[in-house]
Amino acid sequence: MSRCQPGVRTPRRVVAPRRSQRRPGSIFLDREQRLIGVMVFGIVGGQITSISSILNPDKLAHLGPIADLKSL
Image 1 (tube, one colour):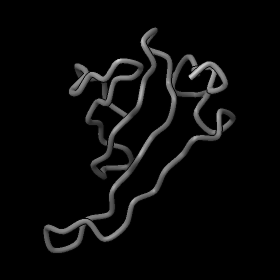
Image 2 (cartoon, one colour; image 1 turned 135 degrees about the vertical axis):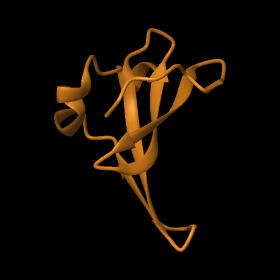
Image 3 (tube, one colour; image 1 turned 60 degrees about the horizontal axis):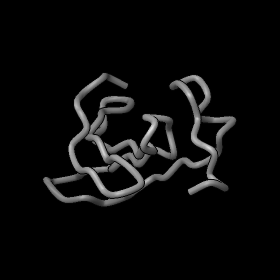
């Protein structure tokens, strides 16, 4: 995943566009910029055909600091 500036801010999290495995997606960060989760979109013919979501901290750990989901 490449680094980019946060796109949308909400009171408790940041949603930032990213690419993962050459597919468009978003990451979700808490206020301290710790990772909450990742979404990746499957696109065919210019339309979203699938959405994959990863929230398991064990699968996200290689991307950086993980948020404490219980505190959200």
